[in-house]
Image (cartoon, rainbow, N blue to C red):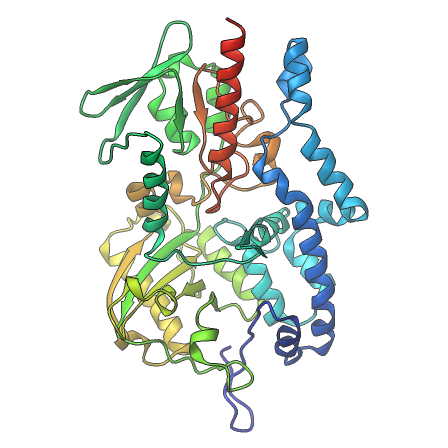
Amino acid sequence: MLEEGVGGNPPRSLLLGRDMEETQRQIAQFSPKDAQAYAAYEALTSRIAAAIQPLLDTAPVDIPSLTDGSLRQRVRALRTVKPLVRAGLRLGRDIPQLYELLTAPISRILNRWFESEPLKATLATDGVIGAMISPHAPGSGYVLLHHVMGELEGIKGAWGYVEGGMGALSNSIARAAVAYGASIFTEKPVHSIQVGQSGTVHGVVLQDGTEIRSKVVLSNATPHVTFLQLTPQKSLPEEFIKEMSSIDYTSPVTKINVAVDRLPNFLAKPKGQKVPPARYMAGTIHLNCEDTAYITEAYEDACQGHPSTRPMIELCIPSILDTTIAPPDQHVISIFTQYTPYHLRGGKEWDEEARNAYADRVFDCIEQYAPGFKTSVIGRDILTPQDLEKVFGLTGGNIFHGAMSLDRLYLARPSALSSDYRSPLGGLYLCGSGAHPGGGVMGSAGRNAAQVVLSDLRSSRQSR
């Protein structure tokens, strides 16, 4: 926290972890009442997450088949209802609390549970991360819930670093695919999806003119890229095109990757000086989050077309745990910031001057918490929303392939016209974060889509 230490003590910090007793001791610095309430809050969100998490790994209810399909299709579609029923039964008396999480602003929920701003603001960051919304936006509670779901090696709600960096995960998946006979072509951009007169896909055409024939095309690009850029518009229904055109891709995110020659030396140390730096700096570090009002002000700056004066900052230092990604005694820091608008006020461009001015502002903020940080920097890479779109194909720079708002979840992701990974064109499927269940490094959308494709292929063979 940015505060003067009292009685020769350093500024306070809030360290949240898996040890509930230690976490409560940390919270008690700010409010003994909140320390007691936190256990009940964690228990509730954990119960809700455990109940609805299975829905992430199953396709949404197949409404078209249930209502308009053949008898065989209706019977098959009934299977898609079972996970929803199980979730409802498991939720039981917690259904009203889930409804509130889905619809209410996260600020209202946290205000009812807690009184200390440092705790409320820290928890609120998970309700707005990656989203161009404030903590006072209805539905921000679900974004928080989405981030507390999942598990790592059996530990509920845990996050982790991939050894070797995120690219190592892609390489691991690629090796597994090749072992099963897949052919992978890199640096081969797709120019268009081929569609026959019958309304079924025939494959894709690469930018170099190469044609790859296939009865099935799965796209993990955004819905905008898949349906509005790669697919011939004349082959899609007009209503579907309008629906895909209405998806919100607004992004508040600017990512800054930094190389440093030493670890940051934060003024604030977790209560209990015996806690080693490697422990309290190995997780996610939140800055400029002492008060939800700061987050709201940062959001309002971006709404006016200005990068936040005091941006919300989340940084992590994976090289503390993974020594393969940095030289000895040096580190890499991943800085996730918001809010930054895609379009700057007055038509100003995100040129090098604007990028560096914003990064300098972020570094100035970090310097307040960790003096000497700026002199430790030996390299940086700045990715604004426009850069995220250009470099990674993320429409609007949106890391979720489209807003995770209530009107774009489950039966409506990416659209109520296409929530089962299928498209209006036979053989064309969406398998990325633009489909259910949305963003996150979990692979659920791809797995669910693959199961739908296999089911369709089996049905096709049986009908011959």
